[in-house]
Structure formats: C-alpha cells, structure tokens
Image (cartoon, rainbow, N blue to C red; front, side):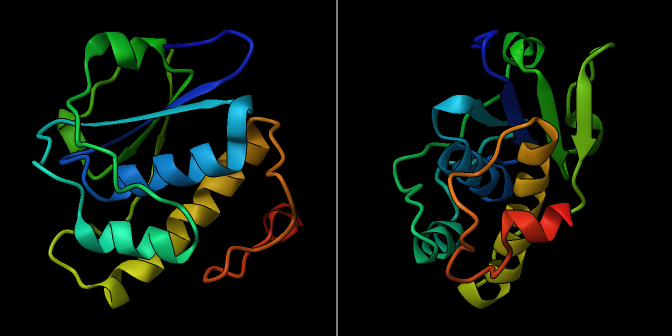
Length: 155
C-alpha cells in the first residue's frame, strides 16, 4: 500500500459508506498522484450512502464505483496517517502511527441537504491535512459548494 515516495492516508469510519468515502474522494481528487488515499470500516455497509454520492457529485467528484471495505491490520500499519471518524474503540491503534480523529456527524439516513455541510467540513479538513503533508491542491479554486480555498485554510 505505502509508496515511500509519497504519503498514504487511511480514512476509517464504522460503515465505510459516508464520511470515509467522501474524505477519500476529496483527498484523491486534490492530491492527485502526489499521495495515496484508502478507506475502510469496522462494520462495512453493503453500499456507499446515496446522499454522500450525490453530494460529492455536486462538487465534481464521482464516488459511485466505490465499495465499503473492512480495514485490515496490514492496511493500517502501511498507512502514514490514519484518520478516524466515529469508529471509537473499534478503530485500530498501533504505537508510533500518526492518528487524527475527526469529529463529524454521521450522514447515515440523512438527505442531501443535511449531508452537504458534512461534505464541506470534510473538504476543509482534507485541505488542512494536505497542507500539513506539504501537498498543495492543484489550484486555489474553491469547490463549487464549499467556497473554501487552500489559501483560506493556511492564512
């Protein structure tokens, strides 16, 4: 999983159907080939949350082909950064690994209007993480819905 020339980030939540899928989508879109993103869940759902898919499509990111997956210890160990979102004690913790905990509402069962603010919060956090990893997003243009630019986060 890890390519030592570029950082790898693993996004974890319980069902790997909403938050972690949106985070992986933003990270992959903004980082391009300069970093790798993966996601997983402790209890993967059968499908990705339809409202999350629709919310991401609004900002030009297609996650329709993604499938919820279970994380494995090997995947966690290989990641440079592990971002957890609501999986609590079920998320793995290995000594010496860099972890971030993102407190985000769970989009499960919510309509697209309620998912948009969660999506926008995830985008802001992904941009901060990319900056921390020394990766500039491809442009300073905001996403259509979020209105946040890389410069907004850094200043």
